[in-house]
Image (cartoon, rainbow, N blue to C red; front, side, top):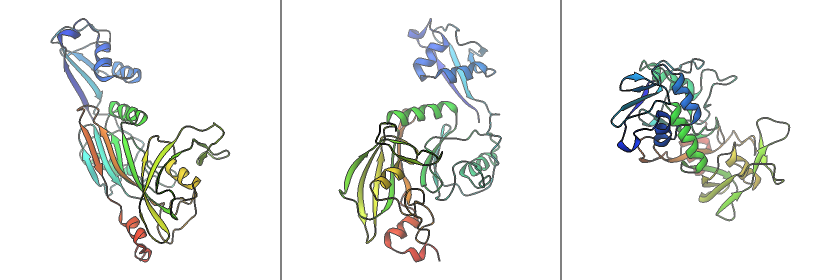
Length: 307
């Protein structure tokens, strides 16, 4: 999927190199600059291919090719499936992922992941596509997920996650009633010894900092609905923190207990995404309501989930 950008060189930029202008205007990483250098016609000044050390003049027309139309994730099989699109432009795709759907193809899930469906979506438009998820969700987690449509957007959104300007909130249903009803969980998280998958709270200084804010929104007899905000993005962060407090997500078989008789997945939903667009600078905010299976669980109507 092709993505290019064009600039007119300002008077104060005259005498600067292409590299310095791109670093100043876009804060391009060294890797992206290298990709531009290796892309045929990746950098054009007044229609002619140049190197990054080319010296620019006022009113020069600079064009860079961030993504070629031929580039694609060739190992991901396009498979037709439902795609709930919340937002799309030439740089970003935001979808509402169903629960029990892997983000990537994996063993036993070569054809039923979100990646397969996204690749089909663009194949139907006769467009090549490189699949680059930004905020990855566990297979069981439903809700909003961003997919970058070029390497620059993916890089900038990754930086936004690191610096906290890409804000995410979740809705989760936990076992029991939490006290206090609002608080911050601040325990480092690291890999559990002996397994590549599981994580755990590390109180010996070995883990990475992890901060989760929560607030109880609603309670029923056995469960509580929480709204959760993340300051960090550690693997399984919400699941590990809630389990450590003694209130695991409902049906979290990894960090709590298996409860497939009341819901078919762990009860976690990516509720909101708020971010600054890397090109326009415009603030965007999206919200996906609580999905039906979690709504019914909260209402105690588990018999309706599995008729």
